[in-house]
Image (cartoon, rainbow, N blue to C red; front, side, top):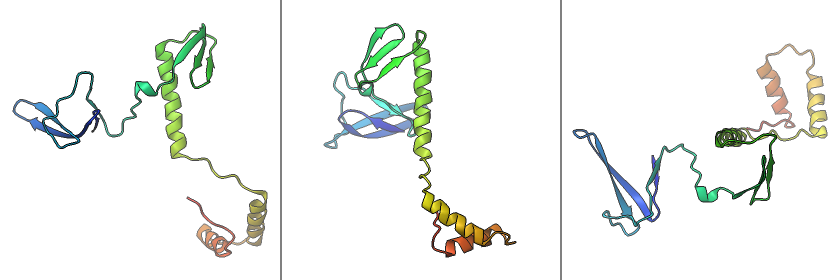
Length: 150
């Protein structure tokens, strides 16, 4: 779990198995473990792998007409029907999942014509060679013209 608590920077938790209660103590930047939050400050504890989006980071939305919205980022969203908040959240989660997927699976670099011709030429030399794939891979790498990117 992680905590974000305004000016508090450390968090101590004590669990009492008898009462099954959890006590959370906050510490401020000066090391004062008796830190008392001011009114309006909130404690937010989330799972370490949670994606947290502060409301202040959300773009402002202006309804232009039914089914059309403008964001303060300059983007527009047009739909053929009226959206419900559930529709919008589902679509937002789908887009967030896509962003996570794209981060985890970066695009493959483009293949240049020259690289393709070079590799094709190397493969032509070994056409008909009855050897295990690892042997062919070793021969290709030994040419110095083939590299592996991870």
